[in-house]
Image 1 (tube, rainbow over the protein chains, first blue to last red):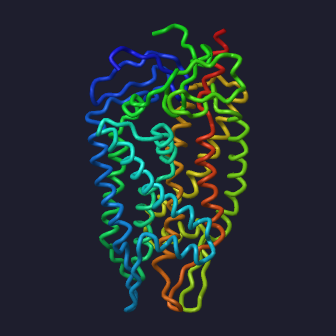
Image 2 (tube, rainbow over the protein chains, first blue to last red):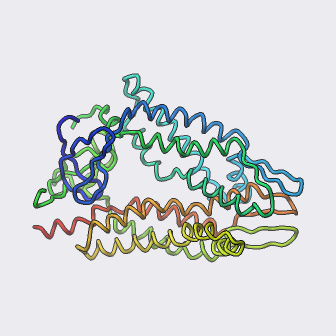
Image 3 (cartoon, chains in turn cyan, orange):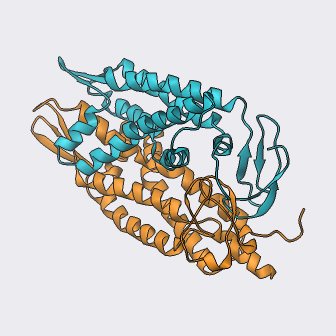
Length: 202
Length: 212
């Protein structure tokens, strides 16, 4: 990316030269202002570090107690998956699938794909089926809703505060940190660096 | 500044919507499925049938929006009494108990955002169909906003999920998810799909054809 390359804006289709922004800077479309390219520092290393941290947090968030509910001597302990299981048991399998997909499956797949792509690239190899895998990773982005789930937890805690005591578990804290770590992974990932490694015939 | 801004489509060029590689599309190939040489995604000058497909989803979401707000999203059974909660009654509950910031948040995320998103998408579709030249920059920004805020509507679905998981104490208190939540989830999913299928480049197309 030393000389300016021609590119078309993905939002307004304006044909323009893509300038190389300074490290940490961004190039925007001249006409509609959409971000065309962000130049990121140590992109691959940072993203790999975030992904490994994310994997650990994801495992903790799914295995340790998530929330406990204490009311008149009775205690209900839940895991992250409990809500999905109970929705399914109540016959709401569509809702159960939606929640399972957006809060557990999407982050799991995203982390797995990030590691699948980044570890070989770090070792100067190109992973098998890189274009397909990277495309899937991008298509999943709008469906990961961990931060929305976190807001849902806060609302639930406030709603139940009057009638019972809610005890947050280790998994809840891991889940909260996982949101930031995943956001960090995607913020530090420079897609152009990945696409540059794909060999193709024009 | 270039005095006559040009769309890539006018040069038979298109940028791959996945990896952003600029690819030459010859006129004879317009109706053939062409794949990006680098990432393998199907290439289009514009997303195919974007307007018709987005309309279909917007109308479906408008229809589902009604049962989503009228039907209860959950029922609370406590000591033999059963109480059904809709999205709005949940907001009112919070308001009555003095938690108005939270009530405002839920009202905004669950009632205002889905409706606003549908109205904006419908407006963008109409403006594109009428070849409106009016403020394309602002219309593109409207599109970006609908794309970004739609996900927050899921918060009510998650609240129901968490309450269902936490509150099952037999006769003392039990919470069940109800049909309204299914419709509500459908509205959120359909509007996210609609925003993905709409092609914002259509907003700018009329401008260029008027230069010719």
